[in-house]
Length: 117
Image (cartoon, rainbow, N blue to C red; front, side, top):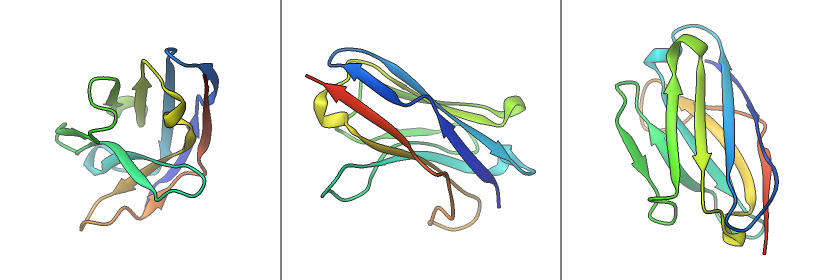
């Protein structure tokens, strides 16, 4: 498994941007599928974006056209660029990894994103 540490969260006004980073330690980062999830108080956890080991990307409908996931394998890092932020984007954002099977089994500690109106 990899160990994951997120950074880049904070407070931003509606319409603003943030870039989240997730640094992975451990071997074979390039062989992992990576994803960003978020969870707001009282809501279910939502996968907002994912990038496979081969570079295929998927997004939740709620963030399409506003968020971009990317990975830098030599740096063992995955990013989430968030533009045109809305108050509804307020949540704790988590980075996750999986290597085999459908479940993400490595998780970071989370980073808080708060969007003010």
